[in-house]
Amino acid sequence: MRRLIFLRASIALFLSVGLASAQTAAPLTEWSLPNANFRPTGITVDSFGMVYFLEGAFFPFGGRIGRLDPATNTLTEWQVPSPGNFAFSRIFAAADGQIFYANSGSFSSVTRFDPATSVLTRWPANRFFDVNDLGVDTSDPENPLVWVVGIGSTFPRLDLAKNEYEVFNVRPAGVGFQIEVDADGVVWSTSQAAALLRFDPKSGERIIYADCQIGPGCASGQLALKGALAIRLDEDGKVVVSETGLGPLPGPSKIGIFDPAASVITEYAVPTPDSRVNSLAVADTGIFFAEADGNKVARLDPTVATGTDTELFADVATITSRLVPQAPVFSSLTPVNSQLTPTVTDVTSSVTNGFEEFAVPTDMSSPQGIVVAGCSVFFTESLGQKVGRLKIPPESPLRKLKHKVGRMAGKFALSEAQARSLNEKLEEASYFFAFQNAGGAAVVLRSFMDEVSELIQAGAVPPSEGHALLTATGNIVHFCN
View 1: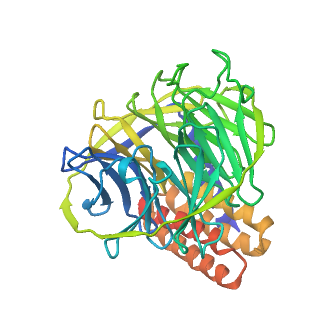
View 2 (view 1 turned 45 degrees about the vertical axis):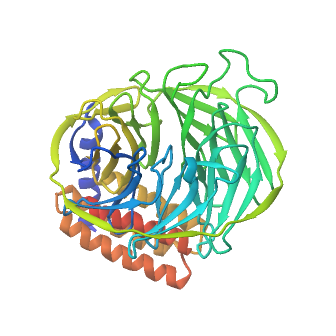
View 3 (view 1 turned 90 degrees about the vertical axis):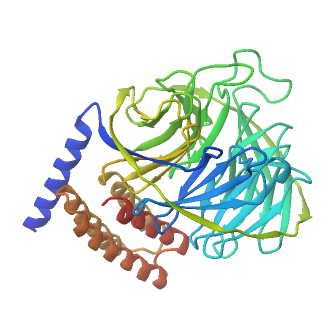
C-alpha cells in the first residue's frame, strides 16, 4: 500500500514538472533522404515500430514508398510503377502489416502494398474519379473497406474481397481533400466548397455542414471553413479540421473542432500567420499538426485555448449508389536499402493561447505529413527531403492508454476488476518512466500486452479495440526508450 501511495505521488510530481513550464525543450531528430528528386508527404507507423512514408516526384522519376527503422537508421525504398502524384494522400498501416495509400492523376487508384513480399496491388479509379486521399473502415476486421475522396461528386468505397467499387453520389461537384472513417463506419470529409461532409452508408444519409445555406452560394466574407483540408476524429466523436485560409476568400490558418451534436465549430487561429496546415494527428495531450509554410511542428491544447464558435447549417439528403467492378493490377517491387546518419537538434517551443510551436531546424523544409507514435511525433519535410522526429514525455501516451481502458470498462464486457488490473500495470510503467527506467517500463508494458491478448481471446475486449491497445502500447515500447 505504501508503495502504491509513493508511486502515485511520484507520478503526480512527474506530471506537474512536465506541465508547469510555459516552454518546452525537446530533441528533434532529422534523417536526410538520399535522392533529391523525391519529396516525402504522407507518413505512418506500423505495429512493429517501422515508419512508412510516401515519396512523390514528377515525371520521369515516378514515386517511392519509404520505410525508416529509427532504431537502426536503416532506410528501405521501393520504386512504384506509376507517377508519384500522391497529392494530399495519407498512408495507412493495417494491423497485419499491409500498407494502403491513394495515387492521383493518370494513375488514380487505391493502392495496397505488402512489405513482406514487396507486392503492390492497385485498383484503378480513374474511370470515374481522381483520388486525393483514402480512409480505411475497420468496423468489420474480417473485411476492411477502403473509402476514397478526390475530384468529383462521389464517395467510392472499395471492397477488397469483391474487387468492386460502390460509388455514392454524395456532394455537389467539387474537390474533396481528406477523408476519415469512424469506428461505426460513418465517413467524414473536407471539401473545397468550405464545408464538412458526413455520410452514413448504412442509412444512405448525407449531411453537408457549412456556415451558410447550401444552394446559391455563400456571401463574401461569410465562410468560416476557409480552405478546409486535413481532417481527424477524436475519441468523443468530434471532428478536427485544419483550415489553410487559402482559396477565393483567403484568411488566417486555423484549427477547427466541430461538435456534430451541437452543429457548432470552435476555431483557433494558429499563431504563425499563413502557415498552411496540411496534416493533423489527434493525441491525448492535444492536436499535433505540421505547418508547411510556417516551417514548424506544433500542438494545440484546446482545454486551455480560446476559440471562436460558429453554428453551421446542415443540408440533408438521402444517397443511392452504383457498383463498378474493378480488377486489380499487380506489380512486384524491388527493395533498396541504405544507411542514414541522423542529426539531433535541441529545440525550444514558443507558446501562445494553448498553441505550442517548434521551429524545424532545416530552413524552408515544408513539413507535411505527421503521426504520433508513443513518445515520438514523426513528420515529413517535403522541400527539405527529410523525415523528422520530435520527442514528447512518456506520460502523455500512457494517459491515453489509461483513458482507453477506462472507456472500455463501461462499454464492453471488460469488468471493473479487469480494467483495474490493466491500469495498475500502466501506473507501474509510469513509475518506471518517472525515474528514467525505460527498460523496467518496457517489461511491465509487455505484461500489459499479454493481458490484453488474453482478454481478446476471452471475449472481454473486442478484437478491433484490443488490437488498437496493443499497437499503441507497442509504440510506447518502441519509441519511449
